[in-house]
Figure 1 (cartoon, rainbow, N blue to C red):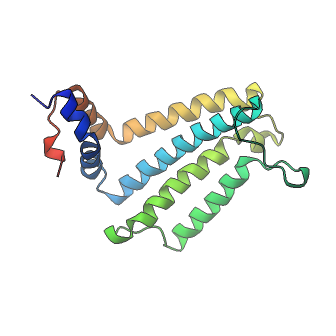
Figure 2 (figure 1 turned 180 degrees about the vertical axis):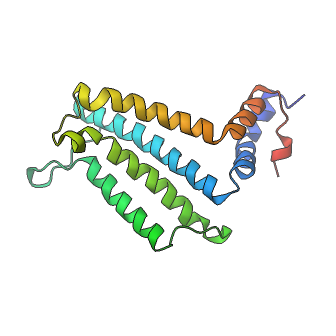
Figure 3 (figure 1 turned 90 degrees about the vertical axis):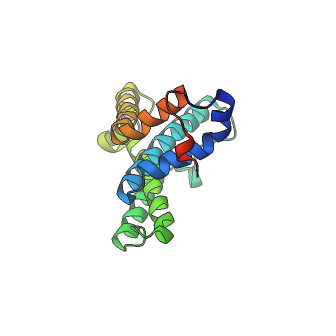
Length: 178
């Protein structure tokens, strides 16, 4: 009936690696998954950083060369342009296992750039800096976080189900460890 808790925790990286290989072997599924991980990671990170800047905590400061505030949406747009160019040039589409790192990197970059851009959706929709108003924050936060988590869960139902079965001890993880 599965491994004892200590054995499960010692094998956790190998089990996660086995789950990843099993459920994300298809390059398209892997890119979608990594893009969503990049999106969710960048969104939560940029939100934490902007809140720290606003509160005057930590090493973070606004980027203001020559007194002009550069919004993080700018970096998102640049990232989207670079990712789109890489995909158009077929630099980062590799399905060949030897070239999949470019594809993986582009997928993560696309997700991150999308998050940076969409985090300031209210700015480009209203053409005014309302990031800290209710119009600029509440609905975007809720929709994006919920939508990202839901998409991750729906896209990888089998992976999540199997991971939860292993974590709860209802399934043996040794078959995934090579």
